[in-house]
Amino acid sequence: MIYNKITEELLNAIKQLIGDDAVITAQAEIEKYSHDETEDLRYYPEVVAKPKSTDEVAALLKLCNEHLIPVTPRGAGTGLSGGALPIMGGLVIAMERFNKILNIDEQNLQATVEPGVITEEFMNQIAAKGLLYPIDPASKGSCFIGGNVSHGSGGPRVVKYGTIREYILNLELVLPSGEVIWTGANTLKYSSGYNLTQLIIGSEGTLGIVTKIVVKLIPAPTVDALMMASFNSNDEACSAVSAIFRAGIIPSALEFMERKGVEWVIEKDGIVFDLKENDAAFLLIEVDGNNQDIMFTDCEKINTVLEEFGCTNVLFAETATQKEELWHIRRTMGVSVKSNSVYKEEDTVVPRAALPQLIKGIKATGAKYGFESVCYGHAGDGNLHVNILKANMSDDDWNTKLKDGIREIFELTVSLGGTLSGEHGIGLVQKEFMDIKYSPIHFELWRGIKKVFDKNYILNPGKIFDK
Image (cartoon, rainbow, N blue to C red):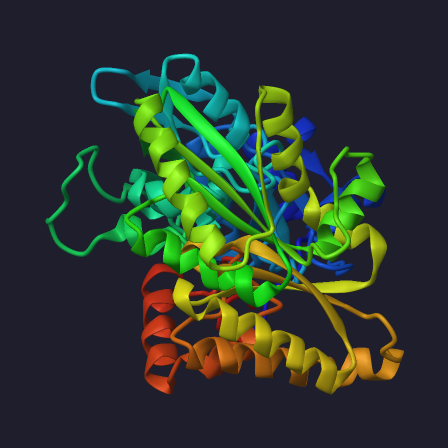
């Protein structure tokens, strides 16, 4: 597709649609919108528009569609797959002014929010009403709910409460043509034709721009317990994961961490944690509910399982402060790893019982190609984040051979019954590996869907599968 540049005439038209103060053209201000949290990639848009209403988004898309201007939707810029990078230039539509919680319906346990609402702020507001929205990615303090929807984001509590797909009931969507639709209904059941809501979740802004989100809520649990279990090896820690579920326990979170990641958080943030010499891996396990006796019984059962797999120590968090410190280790691990080394992060996911084979294979691949790795992630649902560190690799090997190593990791992941991403999305940086999992007919179907929604290919071009 050949796209057009934004002329002075088109720029003036954009300003007339949303106001001069909502349009950014100065290079210094545009820099913020040239990158997300994906490595060190930079792609500069020509113009950034910050609309504040559905009508304004619709008008912008209609204008760009008519003039073949590429459009990249953007949330908070916390993505890790390059989904918000304007690789074709053109217009970035930044959703930061869509920041209102429009309604919290306590009778039906639903809420209607705009896509620019920060996830944690929404969680806190409904928590004050005794309710829970359990989708809490590590970046919850800065990411937008709209970005979570677009990338199918998750977090630790997916293991018990389900993915974001189970909490989005309905979406207001602006199509590239400027037409506006609702994708579903504000009901818990939906059996009325193709489920467009589920199609849009995880579509990474390639089919339309979400302007309102209807979210399902649930009553919040009243008690919780948190424990940190230590192991002498990755294999023992990962093998214990599926055994906990086989024992009849479903934790509200079950996170895996390698020693190096814990060390770096302690070093960077001054966390007080008794790291013993032989500690090689950790499981952070949370159990919640509404009956303290039942919860502690579950903890005892978990402890018994951990002992069977060589657990060397279990630390029970006794205070809210201690719980927060343990969660801080896990939630900030990505930031600490990033501050220590040139790195690439992959988002593998397998059936949870395959985790020992996955991490063993990752380490073997690293030894073969000369890179190191720090692994951590949502072990309870088989989602392992692989932070590949440059270590002693030469610049040439890092820039050329590393992709072969990553391909081998994904080939292993798929052979174990997994896929390329559990929650980060495909975006720009993973699309070259999609052929490992998907056949030509998949690509044909996806292109057909894309063409129906976006016949001129203006919306977030070059992402997921689009060449």
